[in-house]
Image 1 (tube, rainbow, N blue to C red):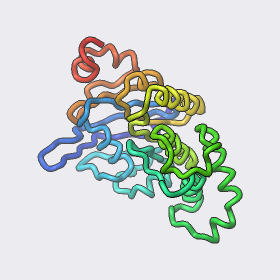
Image 2: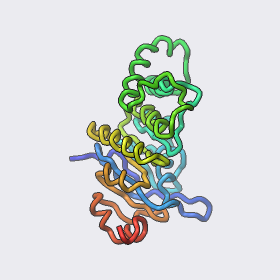
Image 3: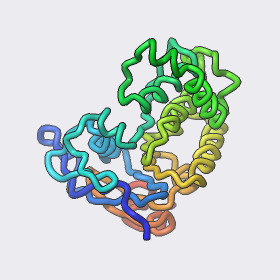
Image 4: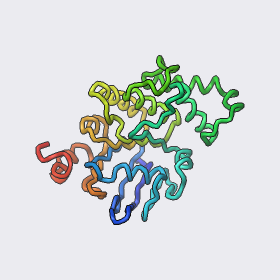
Length: 252
C-alpha cells in the first residue's frame, strides 16, 4: 500500500481580501508524479510556497512524511528531504556549473549553506565527484567549468534540476520546469524527467504545458480561483467537462 509523502490538509491562505487558497486538501503518494495545474492566478505557486515554508497558511497544515512541517523554516523543511526547483532559476551566476552543484551537496551533508573553507577543502574530492555525477545525469558535465550565467535558459533549468537532485530529496517540487523553453528543450526536459520518474522519486509538478503534464503525471489536481475543482488520473481530469471549461478549453 502506498503512503502519502505529502498531505496538504485543509489549507487556506488570504492576501488581504483576496482568497488565494481555499480549503486545499490533497495527498501526494510515494513514488508518484503529481501535477498541479490551473489558469494564471489559480494559487499554484502560492501552494508550493506554503509547502516549503516561504508562506504560512492562515489555517490548515502541511504534513511531510508523517511530520507536520507548518511553521518550520524553509531550510528546516529542505533538511527533512524536500527540494524545490523554482520557476525562475535560482542559481549562482558567477560560479561554474560544478561549483553550483557542489554547494547544495555540501549543504545536504552539513545542514546549512554556510561554507567553511576547511570543511570544503577536506571534502573537495568527494563533492566534485558527486557534482560531476549529477551534471552528467542532466547532460551538462561537459560544460562543468562554464559560468552558469552563460547558459541558455533550458540549460539553466537543467542545472537547477541537478542542484535539486544532488540533495537526494524524498520529495522534489518543480515549479514550471519548462517555462520559456523551446519545444526542443521542452522535449529534452520531458525525457530527463521521465528518466528520473523511473527511479521512483516522488515529484510535484506545476506546469502550464499540457503536453508535459500528460506525458509525466500519474495524478493531476486542478486549481481554479484558489480551490480544487478536480483531482484524479490524467485521463479522468482531461475528460472532466468542468476542467475543460475552466482551464483546458471546451474543445479539448
